[in-house]
Amino acid sequence: MAAEAGASAAPGIRAPALAELGQVPWRTPTDERFLRRYGRIWQCWTVAYTLPFLVAGVGLVALEPLSFPVALASLAHAWIVPELYAYRGASVVREKGPRNRGGEQVAQGLLGDLLDHDARALQRSTGLAMERSGMGVWLVGEGGALLFPPGGRRAHGFCVGTSDRELPPSDRVAHLLLALRTDEGGFATVANHVFAGAPWRVRRRLPGPMRPALDAARKVARRTPPSR
Amino acid sequence: MPRLIRMDGSGHSTLAEWTTEDQTAFDHAVGEFREQLEAGYIGVHDHGEGHATQVRELPREAELVIMRRPIAGG
Image (tube, rainbow over all chains, first blue to last red; front, side, top):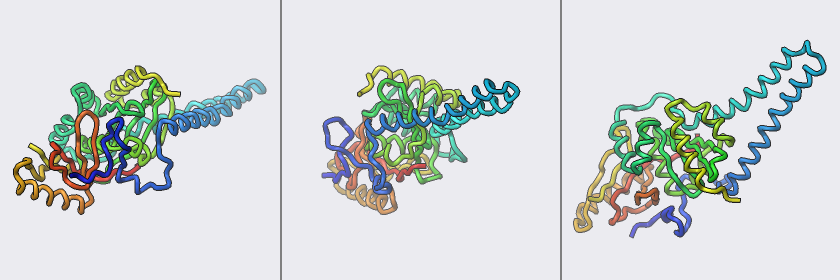
């Protein structure tokens, strides 16, 4: 009988464990509760760094209308900083750096075999693999993944990838997909959590061809009511 | 037919194929599997329908076992 490092991720079977968790023993295991708390912290943080710039901008004009250039700079900061964070969130699924295109056709075949019909078609047109799981709906890219928890009102960005730089793009996606299927919580723990915020903010920063994947993932996430 | 494959620069390579009756082919697959583990690969038994299991020994009954590289936060 196979000695399995963990049971299947199927519901009702004992918790699985991702081998890579051993590399990050100091991290708090990521679960739905952790994500909700993390999302709220990000929301507070966004307000905390945006509000002072907004108040300063409006206040300056109110006190001295001639200071409007400085007020404009302050308001620009209030807009740019959240945009940069959203860009960071969207970047987890963008194509990055030089990639081995040589074996892509073969890799695409394997990845296609791992996905169901709809997810396969979506992946071929957008480059992102959609995966429904316990924490919500995932969009897996070459160097990271976006998660839309039930309700679809928030997006989480996770930066994670394989160490092998020679892999074709679809193999990189397949690596992450298999790790995610093995242990969703472990996958989210190993990955660097780089963003939490409104999905529309991420959507604006995504390359156009990837946006239908985000729309599809949100649609599925919306159908699941958020847990308290 | 059950297969052991490795994701690599060529897309993927089939390392071994076996049947439940063919012990020699299975033993060969087990040898290949262990070699890949020693080289730092991780074995994943894909069950289909969104479920997979990490394996440290080759499951004879598995249809598809995939060797992947470790992942890390970027």
